[in-house]
Image 1: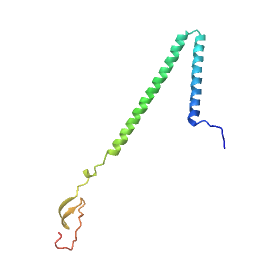
Image 2: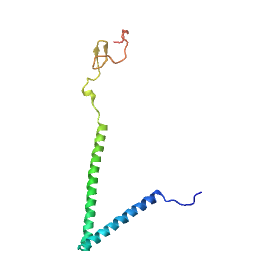
Image 3: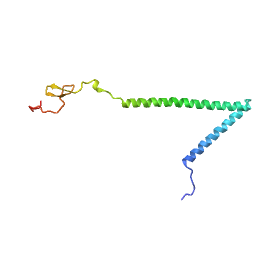
Image 4: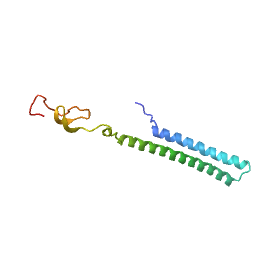
Length: 125
């Protein structure tokens, strides 16, 4: 029996996300320090970093909007295609009751009698 405890996948994922966030924050502080060392005021460096973050967030929202719009149009087109029916009755003449070669009955548009009947029965016209 193994007595060592193992970390879960969720904990492992959380730790890796935390390491990534710390690396990003370290890089951001390094960039602010570098800009300050080049003569930019520290407040200006902070504002510049925030402007870059907001522009990136705006671009992400812009891309997400267009992706959602394309997805919505695709779903609407699929729904419309699944609910549309081709009306074949517009092109063919409907079946009708009439007198024909086999007597009075239901005939198709091609002239064939389609209701059941016995041609040898004298009472079944």
